[in-house]
Length: 480
Ligand SMILES: Cc1cc2nc3c(=O)[nH]c(=O)nc-3n(C[C@H](O)[C@H](O)[C@H](O)COP(=O)(O)OP(=O)(O)OC[C@H]3O[C@@H](n4cnc5c(N)ncnc54)[C@H](O)[C@@H]3O)c2cc1C
Ligand SMILES: NC(=O)c1ccc[n+]([C@@H]2O[C@H](COP(=O)([O-])OP(=O)(O)OC[C@H]3O[C@@H](n4cnc5c(N)ncnc54)[C@H](O)[C@@H]3O)[C@@H](O)[C@H]2O)c1
Image (cartoon, rainbow, N blue to C red; front, top):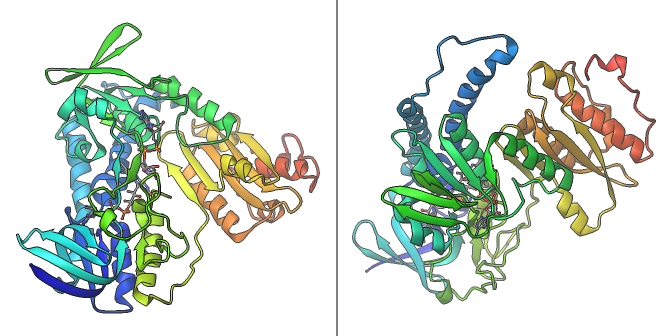
């Protein structure tokens, strides 16, 4: 048994753990970063980056398929080479992973330990090292940055065995399969199902409820359901699907018919990866839902010298949040007991589907639950000038502002280039901009942002803070 005495131990060297390491190191050289799996982070290895690489291939295929709408014809039938698609996904992914791995390997060797950590007592961890040794780590402070794992219904794995896959396996495919059943209708499900569908894979998406994607505004949720079901085979309200395996095939029995797939992809949400950490020995207060209670402004778990960051806390399972939370937790672990409160950024979440979806600032559901007096300004992209020009005129934007002050509180959107509009909106929410301040900002012509201006003008009128907007306003430019 090798003994280690450190000021800060960090469990997990993903995005949150890496930023916690850098922040803690500013306070003490006695920092130990423990990683059980491969270096490279979930985001780069099996998350954000490979999924966007697959989507990029799907966008190329879709552009070819849609070119005829513009009078551009590709005479030969387009051919999708699944092996080439997956080769690019893997090689670009490996490049991103390489940068991350290099960064970790540049850390001092005495700062790194590879093996799975578990608590054996408060402030004491045991690690079965990849070096074959057993390590005991006595840490004055600990950062838990263990990430998350997909939710798997036991019935699915019992029925399907290794034909039930997670996002991790998908990005290692050597070629594209014929058919995939996607379990879930959330972010991962929609991004991957649509990409696979556009790359020629037969896809069915099963939802346990009516919900499609993360938007909470009822009108936008209904629009999302309509738009995605017009392209994808969506089967909703399937809480207990009839699944079985025959040889290497997944069989789904639905409405008296049997459909066959090569794989079923579990995309039914993710939960903090805390099982196996021996939390029962940690002295930490566990909530009934198995999560650790923590302060999002400090990362601190209760009053303990333990901090939690990233997907492990189960709050905002996003890359930029993991990086921020890691920095906050690592800094506070380093400076303990002088724990500092840090402001958080305005919420921002984007789904890279087509049309994209985004929530900036507070969602419709959050505003309603808080009882905040607010009004919504709305615009449809169906008739929006630049969106029509580019043939991407599907979706709508709803922006929410506080009654009385006109301050922008949040927005939800389903539509073209939502990733860019959502950034502008989140920045305005964070600055505390009013609808008037946003309207005073420049709007170019012809751009998709002109749709935002229409929504702002309508909202300004409804807040009784401005005149009714001019119908088909000419100085706004045609189609604005
Ligand atoms: C398919 C997919 C697509 C995504 N796309 C996006 C996107 O486009 N944009 C976005 O913002 N977010 C996206 N995300 C979410 C984003 O990837 C995560 O929020 C982020 O990676 C979380 O970082 P983390 O540091 O908390 O966890 P991780 O990067 O998973 O790091 C946790 C680390 O802890 C290690 N660990 C766990 N337990 C132990 C233990 N007991 N001992 C030692 N080590 C341990 C793990 O091996 C792992 O390396 C996506 C996620 C998925 C799955
Ligand atoms: N573009 C991005 O930023 C991006 C992309 C992918 C993932 N992520 C992050 O990863 C997280 C996890 O993604 P996700 O898509 O797994 O989760 P999600 O919360 O977006 O969706 C979960 C889906 O699973 C369904 N579901 C839950 N339990 C089920 C059950 N027992 N049976 C059937 N369906 C069930 C839900 O109804 C929902 O449709 C996201 O919340 C997001 O934070 C982000």
